[in-house]
Image (cartoon, rainbow, N blue to C red; front, side):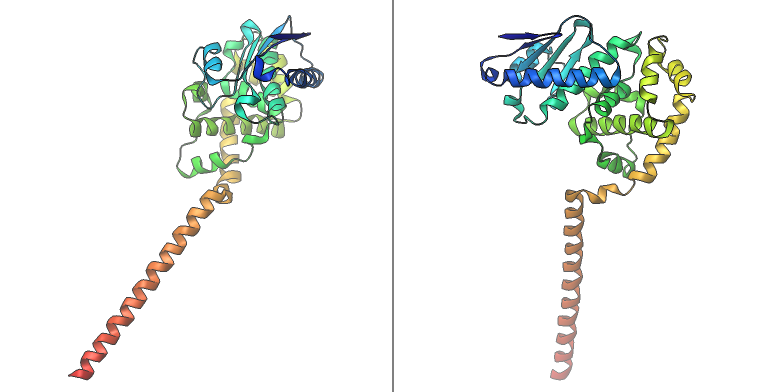
Length: 276
């Protein structure tokens, strides 16, 4: 089944039949918002596929998306494949997921050489402009700082090969660095870079020209920034706090047992002395 509303064609199956009109409204609203805010337009018809099963999602994506992925955009074919809310069980997240994947299409269509755009930037701007703050907490970055396992930005290109925990770290870093660019270099910096990428196929050259700073230098500043901002944030994580609390209780119990044993031994020694 399919529903067409320019510039989209929504493909869905029976499980999504009743919800499809609502999803179509959310897709239209997301596109109107992004088109207005970013000044970018879609060309031609973009096909969106809603997948109610993992099997269909894997079939349409060629088994290239790991289990933790919920959507993928193919700018070359003007195609977006999404896990249906019927599958994820999360209808509230659907509009953000749509915005995220639409931004991938819009940005890829806006730049001269999409393949030269690093993954940290494409994912970072998708999260930043879709207002997806799921990866804004910095908890994974905080833990990575503790274990000295922060991922260099250029290695995030392999994110689809990462296990879920490492992928979360990659997404947090991508969001953090793009937000850092906007915060440190001024509002509109990301859009300025996208406009420069229309003219220049080399990302590093476009970065320096648009933002007035070399990527390597800004990444170094960002690393210093996250070291200060996120170093101890992992303590705010409930699970981390719980384990620290359990460890603290364990240490207290061990100390108490040792003191009690010493007291018992001392009493026995005293009783033996009296018996003699």
